[in-house]
Amino acid sequence: MRTLLRRLFGIVPTLDLHGLGVRQALDQTRAFLEEAHARGEAQVRIIYGKGRGSAGGIGVLRQAVPAWIEQNAKQWVDRFERQLDASGDDGAMMVFLKRS
Image 1 (cartoon, rainbow, N blue to C red):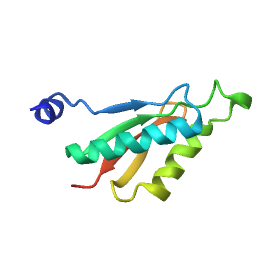
Image 2: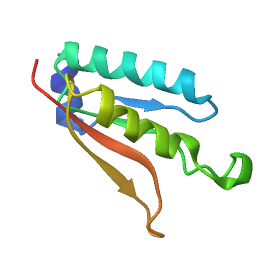
Image 3: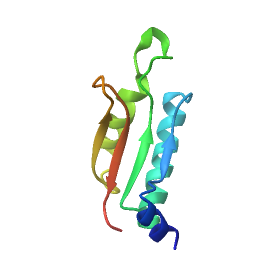
Image 4: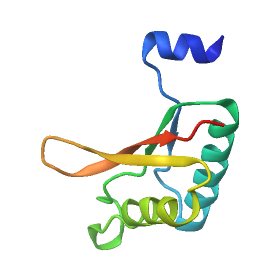
């Protein structure tokens, strides 16, 4: 029923990683993707931020999360797309999951 309602209203399960360190963010990303895949979700959204609050203004999670997914999440993830804002920067991604 939950999946049907989400699809009807266009609601996508979302994980927000703002404020987390790399290790904790990757652990949460793994658990989120594994659980979403097990529930049969078609897609999820992961917000990692642009890195404006990071030391030097470099988005560590912006680089680490997509790289980790490419290398470690092939059993759950079919593909992902970075979500760009009007300036061309990304701070989130849509992840399309494989069917269980």
